[in-house]
Image 1 (cartoon, rainbow, N blue to C red):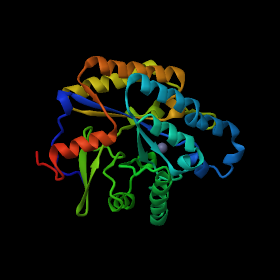
Image 2: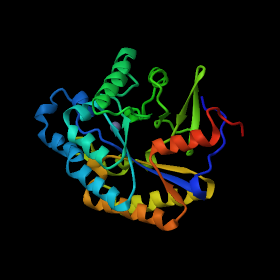
Image 3: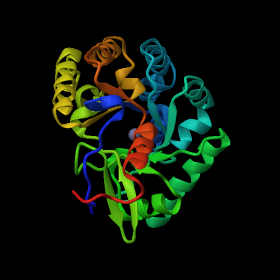
Image 4: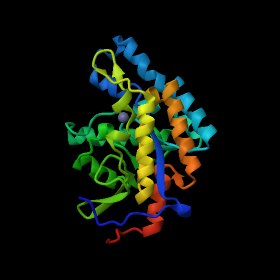
Length: 279
Ligand SMILES: [Zn+2]
């Protein structure tokens, strides 16, 4: 599936790229999972933190750090929490597509997958947004959803993990740019905890050291670190402070390009042209 590719060089001699991405799932995923979601007041309150206090803290932090982020917003979040889109756009950040009800593509019918893409697009369009990128809920990309991304002219996907630098995926005669995430760079893997399923409450310092080591290593070989975070998870005080320290470290290095995924996609497209380049 992976097309021939050479690693990109980054703007202004940067040795690595860093993207701060946030999935603003809020209630969407949980409504699908729990028919009695309306009775789960505690769970609802936890995830709504990501549409209120957590988001507010992160947007303030990004402004202080003079960084733009990429926010993947399900259509359901856009429809029921319109202030979320307004606040993200007011900060100059990128908005990406993250399904409509955050339905996992794997296991969904082809028709359901189409509805997730097209309803999500319609919800973002009502806010005047035509997203360049898509991230599959649970990073569960399928051939059917990949075909829909190509049909709807997305510029990039951010769900697959075959490299730690941008690469092209081929599907039939078509190609799409992949900007790869990874579980080890996802805040949920370290910090998600709920009263029913349990989970982790890791030390922010452990996560800071892990992510800093990944960034430092990426500088050795031109890597692209994509942090995947959730405002209800990373938006809590000590965790947001950890993110501030990490970004300040990247700034201090002086050779890390901090960019939205759309900016990376644009850079890669203009650097190597529309066709993959053989190694
Ligand atoms: Zn999500």
